[in-house]
Length: 229
Image 1: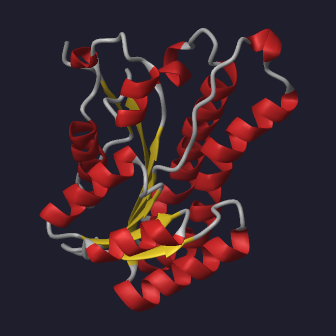
Image 2 (image 1 turned 45 degrees about the vertical axis):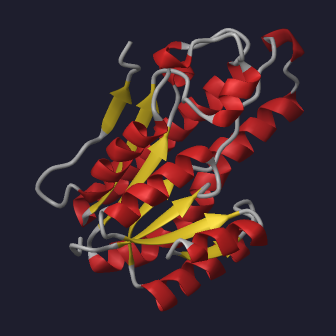
């Protein structure tokens, strides 16, 4: 991988995406950010990154955005698959529509990007894919059956991709935050909780960027990040 790769980031408009984007900028890495709306594009470009608004469930749109990113910002050396979504409900209240929605948000959004970036990575013989799992995908969790299943499926998908592509120099990693992220949304949703026991998004961003940039002679495969409390 080049010393300054073009790093593609999905979900770049979220709290974790923002922390990852900042970590890339301070590390001198080029970032291509995929966001959901034009307002987020303007904010990303103002911060010095390449950005595009794209529906990650539209394969043709994703392929076009990846092609533009490579043409305008350089070959993609890593793809950080941060887009996703959480839902909470009892298993008895989780219908197939809710289950499908979680799989679309957490697996299909990643798979569409992987499919778009893999040909270039394989042609160059180098690249890293980094997905974000969840503690519930490792150990389950009450009222999170659909979310846990979708995140576990993402991890299984990336393991399979890694088995297929690692011999050609393209590796896949899953980072598992094993606790709640300290974000404005989570603070608003859980005002009585003590965020001192939550994970700092900036520290999780450090791990994600490290996983993407270790280089060809060392790599992570799966890593858990726990609260330091």
